[in-house]
Length: 330
Image (cartoon, rainbow, N blue to C red; front, side, top):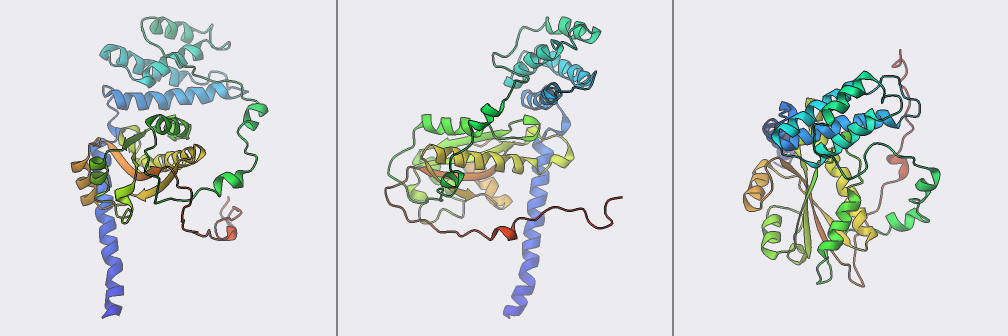
């Protein structure tokens, strides 16, 4: 009987995976940015970020190709016209306007007919960003500021804690950690992350109800985050998985940002069934277009803590020198 069970069980897992794939496809169809609806402020802003980051990259090369970037400049101008006509502006709309001014102001661009035309069109817009956009000089000295004296002391001192002091982490520290984590890379710098945070017992209980890994300590978590990514930021079909990658990068940055501030955390997996994802959304107010990547339990560590050793695999099991396959490079 056990033999039959072990033969049948993998097919049940496969069916669950297919159900999950179908659910994820439905969400991508319903909420992702593949329709390129530029009247939607969020979709337009993600598109603007994608285009102006391409211009930033063009501006950052020491030896720029003559004439580089103009097609992106015109595409960005069209988005800015849409933003102006609708009168509803997002951060990336304003950033794109500032960046475009910087682009046409480059020495090699400023006297061209294209720059004259774009300048005349930009002059009709009454918005721009107060932040700096474009490029800056980044020296070896700047880089060295981030080098840790003992990286091992920082990385190897972090453990997942499941028991915390009976004390809330302040909103100020939470926001500081999120701000630090926002330096995370993302596809075309679209920054599609969104963090939901609560300290309210009722809300925490509702959010954790369908999370399978908080048994035994969930009722004593001081602060809880739900980390999500916005499907509207992802446009091409091959980006159907990108929200998980960008969300994972941001989540790890956030965990280490909290660690750098002395705040303990425990990752709470949200690899859940479509049914549980729907039940969570029925209980707590998460936007339909936001994909739940994971939850994070947060709190101050006690003076003495018991932690899982969680030994790491040998390095040679996870590291391989990459080579070209024999006969594979023609």
